[in-house]
Length: 356
Image (cartoon, rainbow, N blue to C red; front, side, top):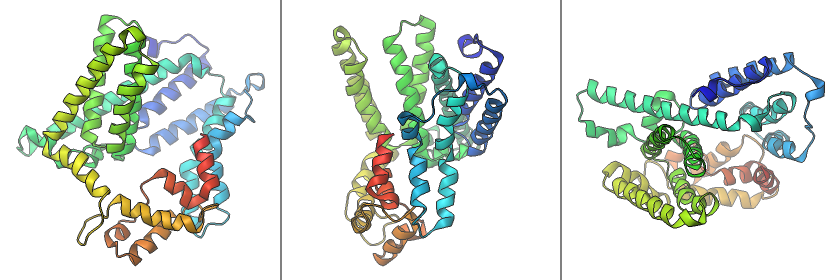
């Protein structure tokens, strides 16, 4: 922990470092906090501006990172919904500012990347522990059985509700944290105390991902841990043992999921519903049906799409025509980022997004 808080650098760089650490710690919470920290870091960078330390900012790497904002900006020209397009500007503006900010800030990100990622992972671990504490306090307060922690009332979005974050977004942050800590446990020679602590964090992070019940994140994590890790991080002589252990743990997790009615319904039952034809009376229409509707709209304007901020409106009109009233009333989008970019900005927008 000392290496996270005690760094040897100039005072200006120390302040930048702690700004970034606080920014990463604030990511699971309301955007107000990380936006406030970002503004503070920007002001700090301007105050300590040094033209001799400015890094090149008109580079392909920087422009590729900013391309998502430029796609939103350019696709606003032909949008039919300017108010929603400008809302998307506000959401994407950090994508424009962050690369520029680090071109003008003197902090060496590569030097402090391990500390910052470790702080991020510990922050996610602490957040999950808080969510579990909140859930168990609620269970005990209302006199419910402890086993209710595995019920739908405390999984997925209901589990993340105390911090008001989308379950999949938080799951992505947890997955990144888990992958980083596992990579350190595999590649580095850590002290026994540190190994035990990181292992505990990995267990908490894994439990959090299962509790949040994001199918896409869990499947991706399964592939990374069982396929990517052994071939890119594990030494050849240890690869067989690693695969045996990782597959065994993954099988235990799958067995545990299928032995819980709530998790089985979330991971398997809802997955089958997502790829099944729709029927009358469904609370929400299957994703496959919504993807088909999105595909039909994309086929009519594949090159440039319909403009920034138009996705929900044009899908809503088509949902109403198809009598997908639940999807219409809930203002659902395509629930697929690739289809979303194709709808709003066409093939050129998706290509820019893929380049990042």
